[in-house]
Amino acid sequence: MDDIRKSLKKAISDQGWIYADRQHRIGNPFEWVDGDLTANLGAFTGVRGLLQYLSLFYEQYPLPDSIKTEDYDQMRQYIEGVIRRLYNNLVPFEPAVDLDPKAYIESSALVRAQDYSIICSLCPDMKKKGINHLDIGSGIGSHAVYSLKGFDSCFYSIEAVSHTYAVQRDFYRFLSEGNPVYLDLVECENFNLNNSQMKALVNSFGQYKIKHVPSWHFGMIDDNSIDLVTATWVLNEVTFSGIMWLISHCSRALKKGGYFYIRDSSKLKPLRHQINYDELLIDLGFKEAGRANVRNRIDLHGIPRAYYKDTESSYNFFELVDKCIGKFGITVHGGDYVQNLPAGQIS
Ligand SMILES: C[S@@+](CC[C@H](N)C(=O)[O-])C[C@H]1O[C@@H](n2cnc3c(N)ncnc32)[C@H](O)[C@@H]1O
Image (cartoon, rainbow, N blue to C red):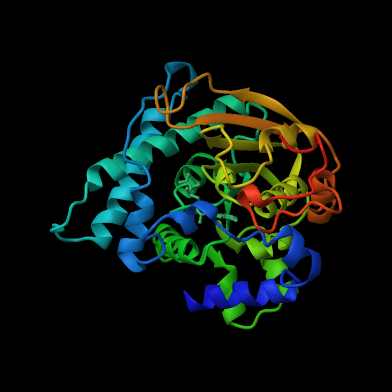
């Protein structure tokens, strides 16, 4: 994991996040507010670290029939099989601690099969096979399972948190089953590839099925190259700067007509940031493609919704910051410490 931290530190310095406006006014976009506030997250590496992310899901809410694809049950069983094999491979004995692997495996598979099914029904114009799918804040990395199987995708995983990136490495290596289809940009840096060589690899077509991209290298992904973005339980946990970074790059990298799928509580959590990202997407020229008519943790876990990009234009990070907080807004201290925001710009 030291190599991931080293890559982050270098990028923060090289990209100027430690100087002037970015250091003193806007803040760096690679922080995780909720993660930093959650005791023990990041304290464990290896198998226990991975199981912390697997146990993110332990409840089960069935999917309404109206948004079930024909292959929903098959997909759910497939994902469950993959995650069960992973678990048995990592923990080939009976643990003598309070774990409920059956619940974590079944719930994780359920949530991801639901994502697959809901994406199919909310994004009818998306190509059925061979898409470029970019997931931000990938947790264990389980979006890759339905994506590779159901969409025959090339899966891009964007992550900003070093210990989560390390967990994803283990998961993506397991999924690759010994085949040379997993591209890890931090490993490329470890072997002294320069930025243009990494950019060429990350945008190459054919060999790689999983492209693992630290968020500080998001800019290497080509404009108009992505068909689907997924962001599940991530946007409401990051800082103002994180939202600006992720939304500006996603809107740049998405093709016109591409879809942006979000699933979370659909509420702004207090003290993270004050930007309503659903409204921001509409403001940037996205149109709502659909929203599941459900109540969070009553009917379903999270409120899934999708937008499609209905514009050729996009904003870079600095343009988007200007648009949202002007030249004098101060967000670096986060939470309630924001100052000088233009009236009416932030909900
Ligand atoms: C609550 S987890 C959700 C995981 C996953 N999306 C899922 O649904 O299973 C939040 C994820 O966002 C990542 N994350 C946190 N801050 C981030 C940031 N500033 N930029 C990108 N990803 C971030 C975390 O490391 C983690 O992978």
